[in-house]
Image (cartoon, rainbow, N blue to C red):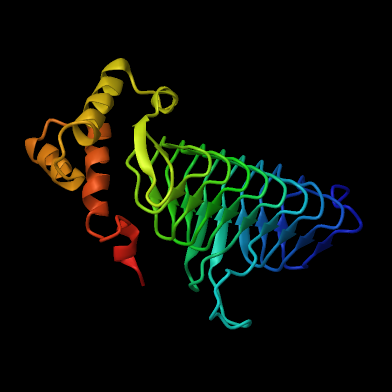
Length: 269
């Protein structure tokens, strides 16, 4: 146990792999599980029943698994859990909250970078290879797809979905779902500005697939004044879409099921 600093406080029920490093003044709560190669640098607080995978690094003063910020929640109310995958980098002052519902989870995938001051609200799901710059604020019940990149001080309304390989510019305030591969900026409402070419390359799309995405973007966002939802339904009815462009259209159609364009709102408990 030479990897545990003497000032660290670790609940006796916590299960840590033999090579986990726990630095000065860290606190690890009951029922926590931590995989091999994970490091808590210093002054990290991990709440109860958090499951953490392999190869993660938690920088000083981040707070992981603290109770959700819900006004009407009683101090002793039972909450759900938080599960974090492998090889994530969690920088200083990041906060991640568990689910507000017993038996449910907030989920963080693999290979994500959460920069200083980012916040992940309860019941949100982050997939893989996501980058969040400083002070990104993710409300409860949000979904963020693989490869999304959120610039500094991006804010997400509750129940918003940002699809895979999107790019949100700094200070964007996002209150509706965003289809994959797009660039979005501004706030209330944020507006689609273009296609994330770098994201398509990182996603491994070949030239033909990239052209299909660009053509579909133009049909949806750059042609005539027909409402977006109608254009999406028309493209869906025509068929012939590849998996990427089909996903773009489906996100728009699903978000249209809610009056504010947030499909997850239709799945409220």
